[in-house]
Length: 378
Image (cartoon, rainbow, N blue to C red; front, side, top):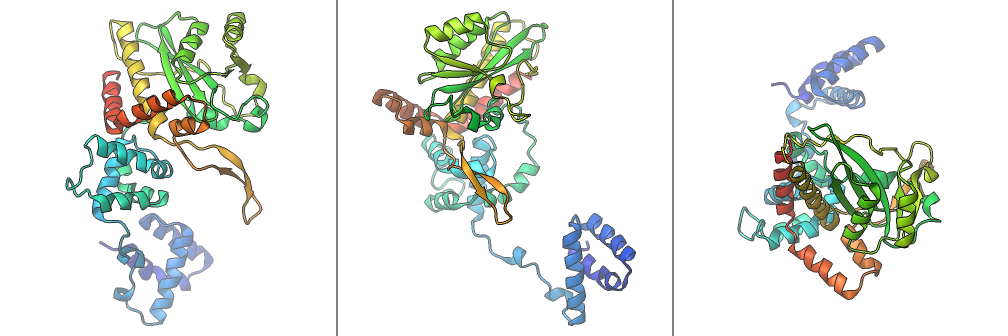
């Protein structure tokens, strides 16, 4: 089998001697055969031509990157793939930030043990030192062969990222408690529409999702969601079509400030996804209540994984690149539960309960539970 370097050397002389049109034809042929970009193909052709003129044999031409020893051991790479799959297949940027918490959970619940599958304290140190770019590079093969669907990742994450935070500064307190509310419909086999409500804390990214039976009033949904959040809800950002007199009365009675998302719309940055139709596969259950219960178990497992193990980041300002372009700057990614505890709004007992719950959660068990529930809902 001819290597890409051999192909480049084959075409090098004719490339240098060809016209501009001929060079373009050779570049098309080489890029199609090797997958290189045109710039890289052009660079390799010229490099091979100079090496031919200098009398350098092909055997002496080596790819230094392939011969460079890997910084991390094969045992660390195998452990990395296990951590990645157990944590729900996040990207390298977030897996790097969540690595310590994921390793603690996997070790605490026996999924990673010293002496088992090559795991050891030295492997743990390697995993804690690995960078986000290296994680993505080492997992490239695993990702290529992985066909897991990712339609359940926390519906509020994209909405939170798209909010115009500059315009919300007058509404937000610099502490948890102000939630973005998203409502989506689920089409059921009976033709009725269930409503899924997602609360996402704008400050710390805490997510809570619940699916309600057909016919449930929106104000009742909001009241149940507020009760389920483990800290005080101070404000809600509602979709444009939701607010009514009943919600206004309920919010006033519970000292909850609420605003309409349309008041903050800034061009296309805040997508309108209200009642947009989320096609969650419910199968064909005869008992709708049982199906909704399974869906809510799924949301609960996902929320625990997101809130206790998956970091989020907040924009903190802007910076100028060397080219003069403005780029967003973000703080260090951290989990919602860590941000909640660090905010200082919880009493000592609440803090202790959250820490104990965090230590009791098995991230691999949560991921397995998510997969199991997804399979029953297809």
